[in-house]
Length: 232
Image (cartoon, rainbow, N blue to C red; front, side):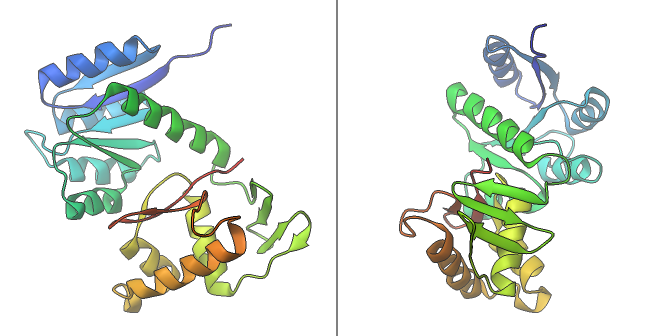
């Protein structure tokens, strides 16, 4: 039996870009459903239940950020922003709205395809609602038991370190902004204390990465936040 095609809802008002992306993705064995407006995109995302949603931020009837927020009210479908907006503040806003990845126009379809496959791989590894027992490299983590070990040797994390790691792992592959992490791990009173994150991420890398100076799993997204990569 042949493998089902990856289904994509493409929410983009520029006809030429829609045609280009659809043609290229269909050549890579994907099924693409086009939507030229936010309203049509929301309908397609709800009815088609795609594997991936790609959305432009500059739509004719509503802001792409609102489309992302609406989708996030009822679905955890991997979502990639495709936009000409390139400022860090705009990227942060998209990630905080619920985007998983952000690609700036002009873009290469090879990179877009790679990001689609990467998001789907990470989603499959994490599993539904996130497995309580996860592994990356030689590290084993039991989120429910709040234990972590390397080759059966226990690694001690402080409660804050564990909360930070748990937050990143439960959203593996998704960029979490500084603001999101500070709110979830430290609380609203510390929403602007970004130095907390630098210190604790440094501690986690020292304990978990083979080379803390060149992290493989705890990745910095410059000016935006952090991303956890590599669940086995």
